[in-house]
Amino acid sequence: MSRTPLVTVGIVVCVAFGVAVVLTAGTALVAAAGHIAGDIALDSAPPAEPSDSVADTGNASVPGVAENGTANISGVLESHRSALSSRGYVAVTNATRQTDGSVVAARNLSFRVSPNGSQLLVVERSLDTQGETRRAAVWANDSHRVTRQSTPGDDTFTVTGRVPVTPVPPTTEPFTAAFSRVDGEFVVTDSKTVDGHRVVTLAAPLERSTDGDGEAGTLNLRVDDRGIVRNATVTRPTADGTERMTYRLVELGVDDVPRPAWTGNVSATTDEADQNVPNDRSAPGTAAAG
Image: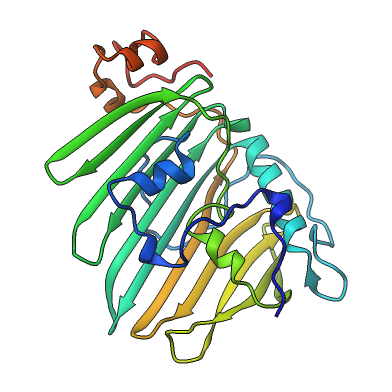
């Protein structure tokens, strides 16, 4: 059994695979991307090609993909991270667990990030196996982050210093554990031209589940000739159903991330808030200086 090395792209696997890691009181979001923030509208429309105003010229090859159709996935993901970090992006990830055809747990993360991560905005919505819904959001600029954790009837807010790390899905939750379970090489299974760019589909099997029916899951990435991952999908059988995760790049090229209005609910009387939040609460909807 072989495992694809991901150390070079800075992925740290610290959670169990699948929707079993659905957020508990917002702590999973904060632990994985606590320097982030946000509240952007979730898009449930069919996956669309990322918009890109830059006149890139399509190339014959895809970074990290060899002529024989195999892929150095670390190289692919590093190229992806570099492109998105330098230009800013909007992306969405979803994770669901189904039993007998019904969704019993779900988790959605929406990201909006400006170039080099100077401003970030992330919102998470989740449904656990008990039917309880939760929401966690974080907004951050270069100096601080504001976190909101919400359960029915209760909102809590905290302010802390900024941890200068930029999240770039699908190298974040919930895909980190899926990458750690890759059991074999990524190979090209499809190639086509989209908007003047060559786009290939890379696929790899996952380790067989010990609690499932013996079938192996799959991890698929759609990567273009700029080394950008446009879409990703993980499907994994379980003992009583299926786990599925998706990633979609909605937009490439984001100039700034406005400060969401809910940050105005942070108490101005706390010492931590006074020390870390700029004196701009009178206009919480405007972007804080990056």
